Image (tube, rainbow, N blue to C red; front, side, top):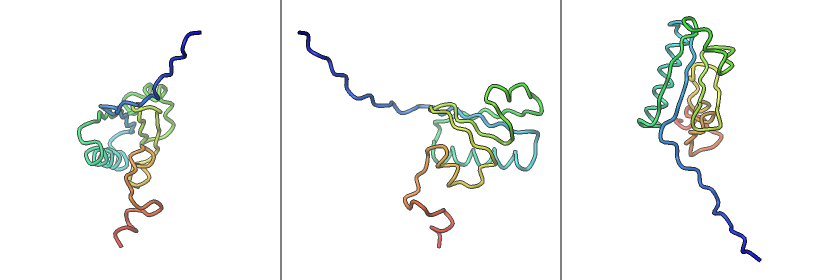
Length: 117
């Protein structure tokens, strides 16, 4: 009888670079807010480990089909997997962090505003 080989539990290697796509429409206040909020989140929580591609659907509407974009602004996190989609301008930082799996809230159930009090 041959011995059974047991594999070690797989450990996910940390992703070196996050691949983020931000879909916007024209140069609107919501689009500008989404871009600024995403940049702030990435600069704070991913410190140089991210790549943001901004896609203006007014100029390239055919690009919406690939990620099934129905509204803008929409952020698609392609890497790390699983893929995540967030609709909106990312102004609610706590929700955006949770949706991206970057939630570093040491006080679950409390928002950033309630922690300041």
